Length: 275
Image 1 (spheres, helix red, strand yellow):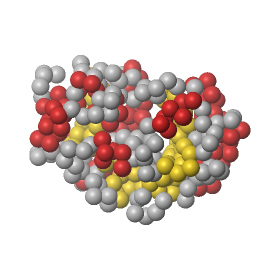
Image 2: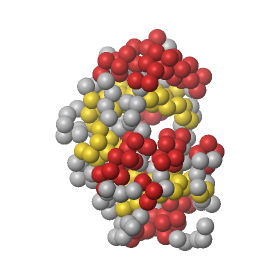
Image 3: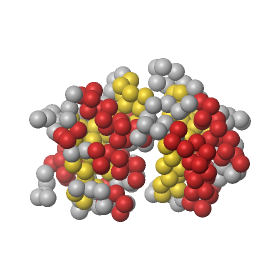
Image 4: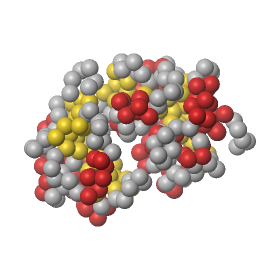
């Protein structure tokens, strides 16, 4: 049996400054010689490859909360895009609340990504956008619309404005979409992600196992937040880092005594301590 390890990026494998230590890189690159090691993240293909520079990547990558599964060479394995009319409906309903989102999608079948935004930005959105100023995916649109291949629509703001919006959207579109409201740990506020109903890490994990012809019970997953719960419930073993949200720790088989800033995943992979 070849073990499979799938880790979240932000607050799990990545340190809080978005870096990966040389120790973690060394452990990862040793582990991939005899195991399958990969990621499941809300990040895009380009940003994930940027963060994972120096790591050997051979297995499928779960990206954009599970909306896309792709090989390191950019071979598409699975894709869950939002219906364009539904996406435009979401944007229209958000405008009634005075909130505009970011729209992330694919521009073409070569998997070239776009990150659309408009002028109407709240302070939290402006802060988020600062981190993307050099990102080639950025596209300004005076009138924001969903794309033909929209992967996700993301709102940033205060919980008191996003929770009513989430409830409103769910009441209108029901199970035609997925609605994920979570605290933003890198800054203040919350983010609300709208996706295809099967665009989550649990469905993507099943897709990866089918592609690799592996049993999901042979998979160990690592995470820290609410969007990891689905794969925690599906995988053979689930591991939370010490800085994980309590809601996720309650679902974990193992809670590590180390945080993302202490190379938690690598220490588990290296068997540096006894569980």
